Amino acid sequence: MPKLNKRTVDALRPSEKDYFAWDDELHGFGLRVWPSGRKVYLIQYRDSGGRTRRKGLGRHGVVTADEARKEARDLLAAVAHGANPSDDAKRRRTAPTVDELCERFLSEYVPARCRASTQREYRRNIDLFIKPKLGRMKVADVARSDIASLHLANKHIPYQANRTLGVLSVMFNQAEVWGYRGERTNPCYHVKKYPEEKRERFLSPEELGRLGKVLDEIDAGQPEMRPAVNAIRLLILTGCRLGEIQTLKWSYVNGNHIALPDSKTGAKKVYLGPAAAEVLAKIERVPGNEYVIVGKVPGQHLTDLQRPWRRIRIQAGLGDVRIHDLRHSFASSAIANGEALPMIGKLLGHSQPQTTARYAHLADDPVHAAAARISDGLAEIMSGRDKPAP
Image 1 (cartoon, rainbow, N blue to C red):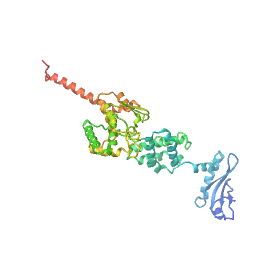
Image 2 (cartoon, rainbow, N blue to C red):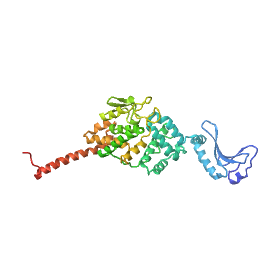
Image 3 (spheres, rainbow, N blue to C red):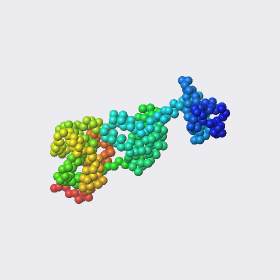
Image 4 (cartoon, rainbow, N blue to C red):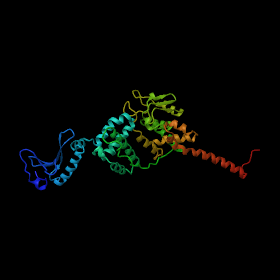
């Protein structure tokens, strides 16, 4: 067969069986002609084991003879250096997609290493943000630019964008462990998170008074809201996280403390003041339900506290207050009462001192007040307004 070009290839006619036409200039480069008339460029070579292998280069008419020749020359050169294009193509066809990586990540990695609340958050990020954007891509093909593009698309919700980036980073680290990508190829590397403003909202004594009054009114007039009211009271009086109170079981309550077997920072002991203990003592135990804050489903805890909280905070005139701000208010009150930061960290269950340090500036308020009292007193003495007792 002479050199394969448009003229020679167009001249080839189909027969009853498929046949090959080989180029006389580039050894291993050829064309397969099918009885249907379809013509496909290919290369043929021997792999390292001596087996004859073939790899298609595209259909004539879609790919030109010159384009196929150029690719054939590159691939055959790679074969000479030990490559196996046929196996490489097969591996690429069967390589996992990001969708498949997500499902394996959620079924194997997450349940073994993450708390239930974290598992739900990972699933939410994957379903809402990761799969729609990257799901159909091959894991090995995802580049840093793809991650940066996804991150940029959510710049209007920077906190969410950063959380999604965090999930992606963990997931692609695991992809390396599973052999889906080469080592140290995590595409999230060098994609910088957006700045986040740490919100610190504390309830004032007047706001706490309004909230307490509303809780009393709802408790008395709306029995169906009582579990939510009890949860809010316990959050305020213990400084616990939302999930710790929502999933609190009676078996964890032990006299003047709560022994949580698991929390964000591991096992945790929550010390109960008399007011918190009184709230617990007044909560009616429901037969067949091990939870303190019961839900509507028999045997289950209250799963949605955000909806009743929205009603409560609006009624109390606290429209901008989040549930987590109740924990901040516990810390604020502790500092106002003169408690040291290490003590507050222990009460809140912080594992790192720097976590508690975010409240350090609040300690300035009582110090400023003391300085004001002292300086005012000295100024009165110096001006002669202060008259010593006879």
